[in-house]
Image (cartoon, rainbow over all chains, first blue to last red; front, side, top):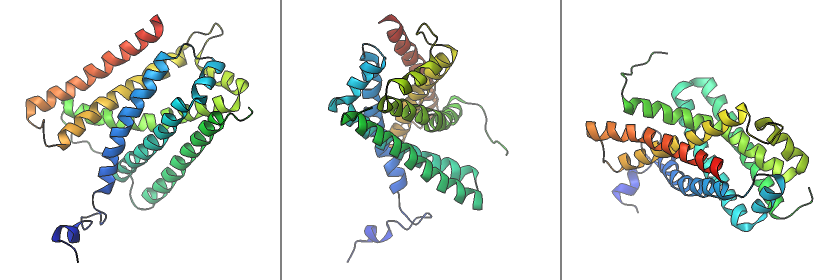
Length: 125
Length: 124
C-alpha cells in the first residue's frame, strides 16, 4: 500500500526523483557552515609554519570539522560537476567523463581523509 | 557551441557560479589535498608546498597572491550566489528588479569579503 504521492515519487524524466537536487542543497548548507569555520580558523591561526598547522590539525576541534568539510565539499562538487558534464558532453564522452569524475572525487576524498586521520592520530611523520 | 545570452547581472552570476565551482573543484580541491597531505607527510613536504607560493623571505610570491586571492574570491562569490539560489528555491526574488539587484549584491559581497579577509591577514 502506498499513497498517490508515494507512487509517483521517483517517476520524473530522470526516474530517480529529486534526490540529486536535494542533496546538492543539503551539502550547500553544510558547506556554508564548514567553510565559514575553515576560513575563520585559518584567519585566527597565529602563524602558518609546519609546527603550528600540525598542532592545529592534530586537535579533534580541527580534525573533525575538516573531515566533515571534505565529505561535504567532495559530495557537493561531485554532484555539481556531474550537472556540468551532462550539459556539455554526450554519449560515450559523457559516460567516460562521469566515470572519471567518480574516480577523481574518490581519490580526493581518500587522500584527504587519510591525511587528516594520520595527523589527528599522531602517526610518525 | 552557440550562446543564447543577453548580458545581465543574473546571467553573469550564473556563469560565474559554475566557473568558480569548477575552479574550486579542480584547482582548489587539489591544492587543499596537497596541503593536507604535506602536513601529514612532514616538514620537508610542507616546505615544498610553501615554497611554491612564497619568496625566500617568507612573503607570498606572485603565484601565492594570484591563487590565494583567486580562490578566496571564488569561495565568497560561489557562497553568495549559492545563498541567492537557496532564496530563489523558496520561490522568492524572481521579480526582475529584485532578482538583478541580488545578482549584483553577490559581487559586492564577494569583493568586500575578499578585501576584508586579506586585509586581516596582512594587518595581523
